[in-house]
Image (cartoon, rainbow, N blue to C red; front, side, top):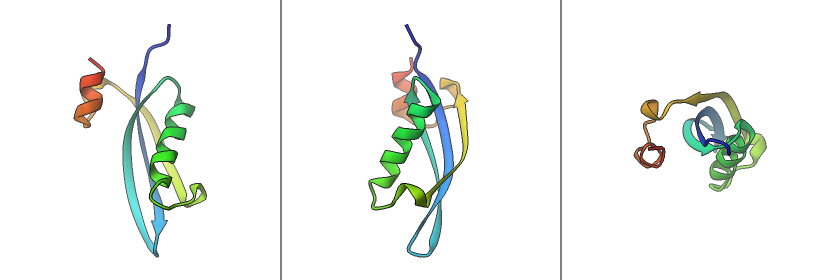
Length: 75
């Protein structure tokens, strides 16, 4: 059985001539699943996926997680 991991995804997107930085913490089995979930969450605010640039994907430990809900679910 597979173990669920926590990934921290950071990147940028452009909206109305401004550049925004984002950082998401996602629970997923694989790195590709985490990317897909992050892209779907960010594109729900009216962006195209081609406007989103992912700069870093990193697997983190539950202790390093800043999102309280994800940290509690990982216990």
